[in-house]
Length: 185
Image (tube, rainbow, N blue to C red):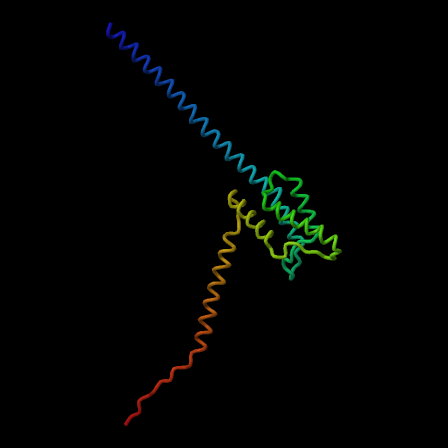
């Protein structure tokens, strides 16, 4: 009888372990499947944001830059084109970009009321720098080629040039050292 009760207990223990193993396996499978699905969804949203918002905005801005002049800002036609992009892809546009564009639209309305002939918006490049930063950030997240640390690198170069210029000026100011020669007596 002892053998029978032992077998029953061991069978119950094995069944409980199998049940617990099945539940743990299902939990892990569910977790890893959901995290994979979330990563795929995030990647799709980033790709859509890059292709539907930032690339067209950069193209519109780039079309308005004339060689030799550089970036002087955006005009009314570029502003309306960017506004259409934002309106058509509202779910991919972040709040800061909306604030820039709606601020420019408000300025445009005021310029129209004041009869300004050729208004220019974003002359201080804040929106352009923001768009380029987000564009490069999205490209980096998607493992696409991107421009690395443009601002840090330019800051470092300007700092190095400042030191070189200071050293050059300092060395030019020093009077030549007079060397006394011993005379034979």
